[in-house]
Image 1: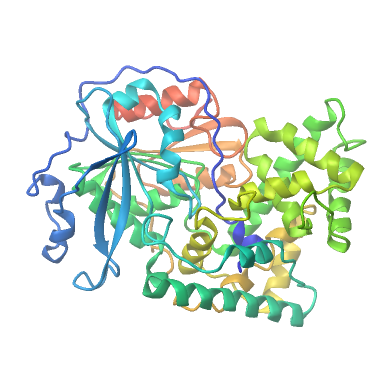
Image 2 (image 1 turned 60 degrees about the vertical axis):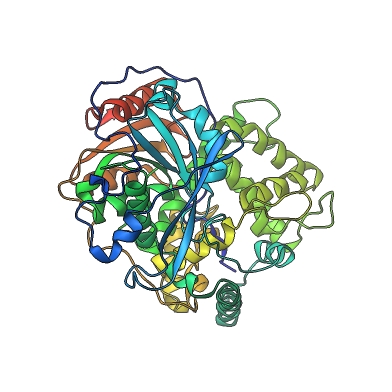
Length: 510
């Protein structure tokens, strides 16, 4: 099972819908209305070997208030004549009845189901955007409804998420590597050859097939968190087919695993400090003294739980691994900070870990009955171990852990020793692209939040800089991502870009 740092490399997006801002659509758009004509310009210039995929007809059927379809793509993009897999799509037709194209969405992860996210996404975008576009969600390869990765039973996943590796000795590190290797072998046994083809580049190539099958000459897309990595990869592979891309809560795709872990550790440390200051300014905060003292008390709580896991109202104990997940989850949205205060109060004053365990379960997608309705945990690890693998030599991991601890003394331990997770993953690493400049692409809007714990603001700055046509929009605030949970300034700017193709001024702040 992936160790704690890997489970938090590209964490799931948490969105809170706020008020909807109105924008006026322009009569000009980059995408034509979807068409069923297989000879459409949407598939122009495609390798003849791939033409059957690009020219396939999507058969939409009613599924509740939405429409459903499946698309076929190659299992291995280097062998288009080989085996195929299916991708599940959901669509909410444009309310105008005359769409200018499709707006694809990805909520992050990797591993989060866009199909499950679509009902929430409907209320995040303005009425004008819903009128202009068909809203389309698809589960990327390996995720939930699209040829999913499968690894272990729920009870085994319970054990693995609660597991606390011992990284203080070489023997403990070796045990962690061995246990993660066994998890990988279980994934390979249950998933088969697909496990070696759920990398981000393959998913980005799938998106271009979907773009063509939907009848769009250019891709319009909104990706959150890991979804920005997917969007940036698409832009790098298909710059001429970039339409209007919004990348919110950006990843820096050029960072290696160690740099990602260090950045997230510092991000969560800073977010926790901001929470502590807010908690101490209110009533009934369990953290006394100043911010430094409050942070020390949270560190002491982790130490106590490591030595003696807390009881809960059920038959599961709260281990320190689960405790950190419980503390981290509310940091994704400032609106959730009061929930963290209640959970810490129960743990610190009553020795009750129930509330923190519930928050950890929320992170992992575990239901009260012990089931995991989605495969987000399995898909998460499978994608990340294909995209990048950190050094696994004990000496290198210890040196990295020391650097992380300096930047994040309270939570850094939970982002260290990530190399143990993928050291013996049973399929070869695919790796990242050589360049993400996407030369020749239309303007791409990158949205960054200054207090984002999961995708630090510096990553949004870096992605906007490396994209040849990147434009940076900054939200000055706390929490993970901005569009749909921040303010009208961000919503107005993003909506205007989606509707007219004109981004805000580079460097605009909200």
